[in-house]
Image 1 (cartoon, one colour):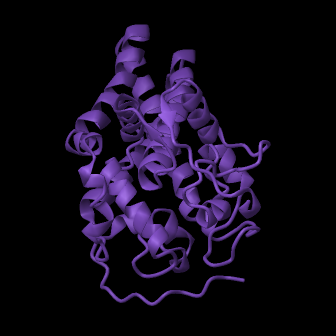
Image 2: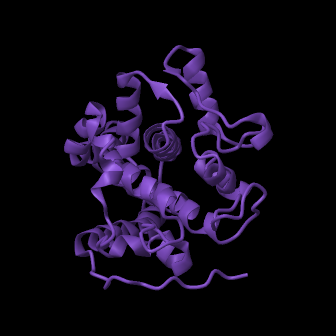
Length: 285
């Protein structure tokens, strides 16, 4: 059954900066990347770095931004946190401070006007349309805990330098392999194209996983489980479970659930780099 539209209580104010940046990334990804591939082609280095950075930046979001900061589902050493937040910054999804504060508000006001990516407003709004308008429901209380974290604030202050370092890395690797054209090709595919892919896979959690799928754990909100989205997002597609047990470090609680994020957190704990892994009671799974 389709979700009824939610009344909009605040006028929509365009966010021109974010809209321009997203439009630029989208245009380069869907026009520039294939055009370069058609006329010049991409090397194995370009494709390898695309894959590596897709995994690294995706896990930076799922493990660092999401499960560590937003939900405090585990603890880790500051240098491990810094590595995760740099990787998350390379995903071009805003600073950890802004991302996590928005996500905490999403859980507090899911499917309501204050929900930043309110699914009751339709697929495209929850997928990416919410980015194109200024957030008139922002509330600093959701960032108060995050502002007390020195690593979070360090990443927030240097966010754009971190973004540029990630894009610069792709050009440098391509340049060292095959000169200026190699640098441009690697920047387009492993830089901009990869960022576009990670952005849209993450957006699917806000859109697809609130509109289509199963609700085996709770029907209190629109969250749904999608194993297919989990394949793209390192386990984040078990979204109905996550909304029901928000602090569990696992989104896919069963051993057979595809959830590389929980495997990474578990591995870090075995190496002594993470601790206090939180789980739901067995009877609640």
